[in-house]
Image 1: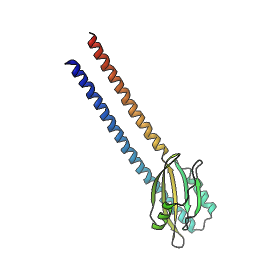
Image 2 (image 1 turned 180 degrees about the vertical axis):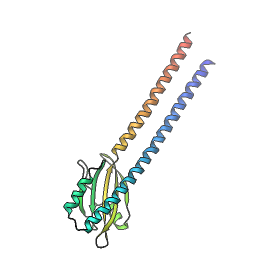
Image 3 (image 1 turned 135 degrees about the vertical axis):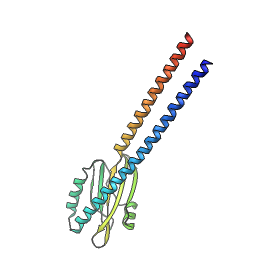
Length: 193
């Protein structure tokens, strides 16, 4: 009867460890989704603000070099990998790209944002990790619409998520291993007596 009780206690402990581990993992996934939404909101606000600044600069007749200089200063923002300004004809007016990343090209997302005059957000998988693209239309002189594209890498967020998963799972595995070893040692010790 004692062995049955010990085995039952071990199974219940294992089940509780697995259940709490699964709960923690699901909680971390939810936190990751929340961080992604927050990042998307931050990029949206940044793109809208930048769109207003670029719209003003274009209306004042700034040159492409002056716009490029503006983008140079902006690219210093953490995790920002590319910024591009598109004219009404979908051509790149100015762009700035961090080293190692592909230059933005006007694609279907840019075309749709210019046509609908509504912002578009796309999450892309690249060789260097996930990148959040945000295309924000803005007023161009002559009642036309231009767009600004902001690309931000999610590598730091993904790295933080993986670290949290490793820490939680590793701590659960250590506790589980110690629990199993202690129960095993106690049962062997009690049987030997």
